Image (cartoon, rainbow, N blue to C red; front, side, top):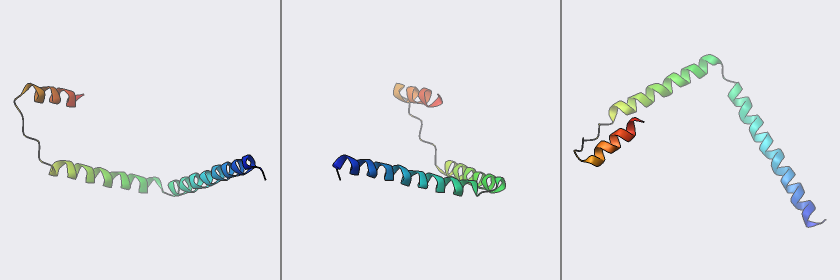
Length: 75
């Protein structure tokens, strides 16, 4: 067998394996009901907001760099 045939077969096997992984992930994703997805999103949102509330605010600096950082953070 020539080397280019082996490379071609390996490439085809890689494409097939990637397709199998994608199909498997899609089936898992579609297995959830809309209510389950909604519950997960609400739980993630509650967790994210709880972490944001627990973190203390950084101290305000008086220099011009701090003002520039605050302006850039707003955008």
